[in-house]
Length: 298
Image 1 (tube, one colour):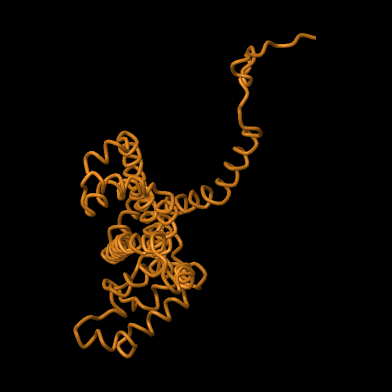
Image 2 (cartoon, rainbow, N blue to C red; image 1 turned 45 degrees about the vertical axis):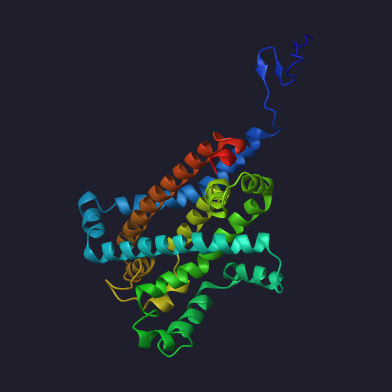
């Protein structure tokens, strides 16, 4: 029986064979692809196959209709605006939780996760009760001409509520692990607080912030339960695309519903792909700039 020679510099490499350094890699990869296909890829493929039964002309007629375009614009526009608001205020909240100690910090920190545990329908009812014309907040806003409930602004409020934890919980661990020595070095070299934030802190947390933004945006695009109560569901005004899909299903127009759903999937995937590309560019740009260079520039 012959024994193959083993490279002493790389024990995983023998004569004629190359072993993976990760035990069970092929088995784990197989289970991963199987589960991903079963849970994600096959259902999504079913949506496209069902929509394809209509033919290109009918698909274009449905997608280009005024009601569908208005619903898609409202869904993606409000989701983008809510995600942008969460990116700003979620960063501020994460900064306060990481850098400061104050009474009731644990209580407020637990409250951030409340939208994760709270049923979305309950959140929608609570927000509607607050921002309606006779609600605690709405009764003060409507006399000023600010209508929140049963208007697109109410959708932004609901999506901001359910998307905030994604940004906070994504940025918080990165801020906690950030090197505060770089901030102190930048300050000792004469950098102002604004220069330290824009040239030292923000570049280091930008990938995490973009990730939180993408998660909040993705959650907002498909949100249904918390929106239908506060939106008012008026066609061409406050009707979101997920609600339009449900309406088509209730009309037993399954092909039309899957056509709108497939359109949302394509647009969402394209926007998330662009966000991921921007995140990758940010990571490469940050890795090419040494910490010393950043401090000197500030």
